[in-house]
Structure formats: C-alpha cells, structure tokens
Length: 346
Image (cartoon, rainbow, N blue to C red; front, side, top):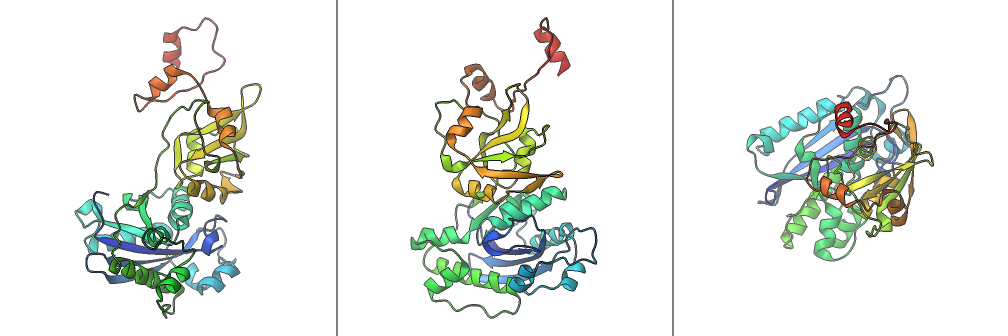
C-alpha cells in the first residue's frame, strides 16, 4: 500500500468457537463477518455490510456453534447452516470494494482494514484461507490495530473496545446485532481519534512468505520471540512450519529444524518471530493441527534457537545474501561424488 489510506474497512468476525481475546485459539471456523467502510477524509461512515458464513463440516445435523459463540454473539444454528461458504463471502467483499471505488487492483482509493486486536486477520482468516486453498487478496496483508492507534495518541493502553469508549466518554452503540454493534463502536473511536488530531499512516504488515537466512551463535535473539514446536511430521520442511504459523511474521531465517544425534529430524523445531506479539499469537496455536497431527507449541529461549540455528559459515552467509537462494543438505552421497554429479542429481 503506497501512501496513507483514504478509507478504513472496520472489520469484525466471530468463529463457531471461542470469542474475544481467545478468538482463533481453538481452530474454529469463521461464521460471521461484519465490515464498516469509514471515509477518513470526511470522518464519516459510508456503509455497513454483514455476512454469515457456513463452515465446512462433515455432518450438518450436528450443532455448528459452541455455547460460547451463541451467548457472545446471538447467532443461531439455522442462520449459519443456511449461509454461504467463506470463499463466496470473500468474493462478495471484493465486489463491494470494487463498487465503492476502493479496490487497489482497479485504480481505487487506498484503504486498509482496522481491527480490534490482531487475532482476526493473523490467527483466523489467514489460517482458514490456507486450509481451504483460498488465495487472499493483497489488502488482507496490512491493517491497523485500533488498540495500538489509541495508545499512540492517548499514551495509555486499551484492552477492549469498552475500555476505549469509557475513556473517551462515548456511549455504547445500541444496534441489535452484536457484530454490527462492534464495528459501529470502533467507528466512534476512530472518529474521535481523527477529531483529536490522529492520523492513520503506518499499517502493520503480514508477511506472506518465509525469507531464508543464517544467524551466528554470537547473534542476539530476544527470549520473548522464540517458540518450540513439537510433534511435527518427520518430513516437515521449514516452509511447512511457516505455513503452520501463517499470518505470523517469522524472522528472516527464523525456522530451525532440530536433528537427532544421528542427524535426522526429530519432529521438533525452534521458530523465531519478529516481535513479541507474533510469539504470543504463536503460543495460541498450541495443539493446532498440521495435517492429521496436532502440534505442541511452547515458549523457548533465544539461546535455544541459537544452539540449533547458529552457524559461523561465512560462505553460506555470502551465498544467501545474493537473494533468491537456498541451501539444502544431502546425505548418503558416495565418497567419490564430484560437484558436477551432485548438481546433476538436484
């Protein structure tokens, strides 16, 4: 996204399972998307759209929604079972952006999503889209976190929309639908931020690929940015692990596969993230699935990561610094193998 946005798409979602701060922690699928288009130049609401989403399940005679979801959002089984699947809902969103002249691929004005915390985009939507082989558009990879924008201006943290409303002495919205109420209240906060001189200029970015890299044992790695993943399929590559943590920004060269004493992968890996927030979100993926296996995710230290990933090979570092390069390990080669023979076998 080039330049500051002219519009914000205020975005709310509910899953069939956990809500609030635990949204996305249980792998439940999305069942409700609500988005409000906000004109930043004129500080006004343009329109609100709401979609119910039908999750992919094997037997629709069973209940789809958890009790927490029903109590939290007011959604019901019939509403969700008769809804459209996620891919169709995202297609409708794209048509909406085109109709409002803000779709980036069609010469529209710049817009970015605005969310109450990172879970919706980083934990829920990115993971579900990957599992369902849905190619997300570029506008899903940058956003503003309203809590952080609030803190930038008022120099105090906010843990919820209610916190922000209370501090700003704004009355709660009276909309019947929970999701619509959420985006209206967020819009009220945005309007006050603008009136008090705040500008939305630096959206957060979601990386869509793992960058190769090498670290030295002498490098500093923050303890609060590393996790250990256990239970990985033995054939898992660093790219597979990055896909498991899709939506979370892994540091350059941030996946280190652990090897047994025999030099074989042992089903564990150390993953280094760019920041504490991504690490904390990664911990919420504890016992999420990679294929048919559930993966355990625990805190680890910077020293743990360096013990596995740290190297001192200057030639390898120079090789990777040229860009678009990777290094592979080959085992079982004949002692007489030449460089040309190795290259021909790759």
